[in-house]
Image 1 (cartoon, rainbow, N blue to C red):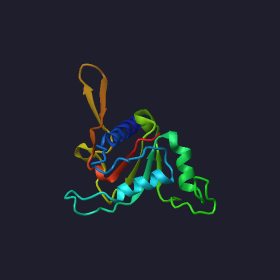
Image 2: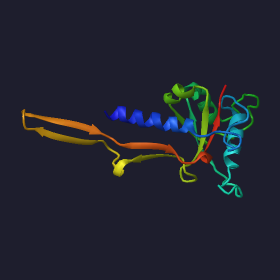
Image 3: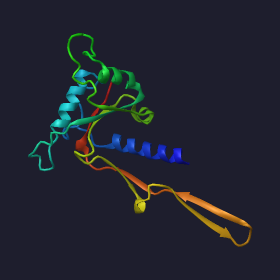
Image 4: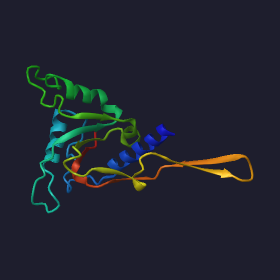
Length: 178
């Protein structure tokens, strides 16, 4: 039950991530679609930094913390974020500016939603993101039992009440991929 519960919460969290309103008007949709690369990651990072507060007067200057990808891009992302030199291979003497700059989050749940799209996200202490809320703060399943008077038996039931929602679009940038 524990694994099933974790997978359900995970799937709904990624569905909330994919369901955020990504648009050029919101400044959180990359203009040029493509696989994670120095060029596309740089453009996504710039969009995240340029996010404005709700009054549209002040820049939030958000730092990218996470690269959230389907398993389709796992090897590409590892090369991009862990290589010492420019990952494009064009300039072996040029330092890779993205080396160890982001935490990679890879999940096959994203493959099921859209195997091409990938996201960058700000750190959770910079802007509201995706919230998982639990009824009465119970993060573990509730187990209830009842004795039966008619038979020598006991009935059990287990449940977990939770809700997941995206609170703010500004902490995420989407690239539609290939």
